[in-house]
Length: 337
Image (cartoon, rainbow, N blue to C red; front, side):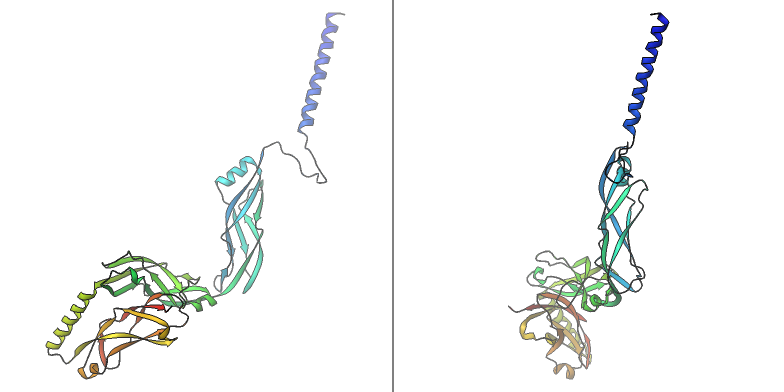
């Protein structure tokens, strides 16, 4: 066989082998179909599946309604190329939306829509629907009452004055919840055996008549509280000194220190231990008026009180009395066992 013929055979064999290799490569990269769904195929790029948490935005008429029971976030399952899923995890811009616009009072189940998802990814919300209640919106102004554990006050000391700023706040929420609020408490945290004055920024909480927290929105979350704490002895001395100065000044008005006595506007005082801080106040007026006053009644609503509560109550000036040494006092009410 000639050299030329041998070379030609080698070239043909090489070309045939090359063609086989190319054919094998093309076949290996052809989409692979499975089952009855011939639109699904295996991608050449590596895929990844992951779940992230996205905030839930509820769209509704906030002028007339408030929402109850909506979750703050939902899970989102992502599937697609590894690079895109990782990017979504690192820079989560996906938001879940529940649209209740146009709906009225009541419970509604609506779909969760996802925004900010790459068109190259498959995203599924979990849950895919949420149940949310639209309630009629209401608001009211409520007094802020200073509340504290009087057992933390050192023996021989008492709270002689409290101030709070702001004195009132606006509460907003479902009408049923707003109607249930009795007062807003500024809950002061005291150390054991407190003797010194206290100035503190305290959290505000709305309470019902039982002292249980009510879920509403407050116009202010905290209040500034100041408490004057004095020894019982110095308080008595100060009152005696004040009374003495008043009686020797030649003024037509006199002063008298009288005890505070709780009187039930609802419920019965027989079922409770009631204490005031201070336990007595100084009244100023004519001697004829003061001679007929032995104590100062304080009206208390004792209905639905099931546990110990301390709150601020306003004092009512009796007829004929010119002034009171305190406009309000702290009252601690404990059910008798």
